[in-house]
Length: 229
Length: 225
Image (cartoon, rainbow over all chains, first blue to last red; front, side):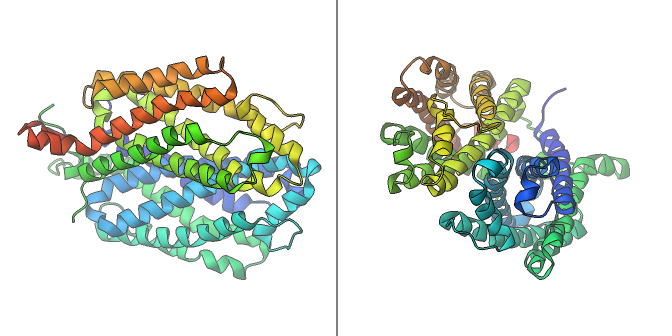
């Protein structure tokens, strides 16, 4: 099978589906941010899913963006860059939660509790200074990135517009998590995760759908085959 | 200014250049991987640059790959996938060096020693779980990914072949560097950084070059990208 740019963009769709579903599952099954959770298998599985959200999210989002780059303009580019930065920073946090916190639960419970304090608001004797600032920054990156990318997707009219709306609304709802009880807060991720999966599924299947409805439709300019090489 | 696919790919060359400059530039001045270093502000600056470099490399490799995806075939795809995994995981390690180690240096020196031991080859006494095998994954993907990506870039003949050969060579000499003392090992990153600067520069300037040469290649480039 020959590799084509069009094929690569289409296959980034399943990556976005995996990322979106992983993110939604993280939202549903995330255990409470307390010391007793950290050494459990659920903690490990949920945070491995969160790492999957990052790597497949970076690939999937790149494909979704590439598909609509020319139509989505500067708003799309801004949203894409903000979400990419968010995914990279989140990767750092989940990396620590998978590889660092579990071995430290017995050796250094105070550090683990300080770490969890960033999320559950409990004060700690360890000052995590820069780390808490970075965590705070991830909020606006996620919300603004999601809203811009959602608007750009809606305006580009290449992928389902309602998936763009769901992404924008889903990420804009982020701050509402603060109004929920601690154990319900992660569930705020579910709509945005589903929106990403929806966009990925649409990207994956659109060519088949398009060729089934009309063989007259040529590929979008971005996907044109190279006539000269 | 309208955003175009070929414009985005071209500008990703800038990310490759910036990442390469950081990668090559920090090696001679990198503070030693030891407990006393991690609480210095110089550590924060250098490791902060490394964190930016990881993101720049992820973007840069994506652009370089996108430019030649069709010509680079499965070899190129394999190389790109392995390099993505390598730099993705590397981002996690650098995040820990930047944000976690300085905070815990006073309270958990044993942990910091062990975590730095993953990179400097002197394993600490503390069990740090899956970090050690994960660092091996980073290394294998870096080596194999760089080698495959370099070969695929030469064969694709879309970008200049010398930086691609340098990239493959830089990946290959990395295990040989393990024979050197740790302080010298890091110099093996310099050719990799230079290869990225060179590839990024080619990507950034090729359209202008083509236009200057009056070549019909510029048309082909626009269509291919």
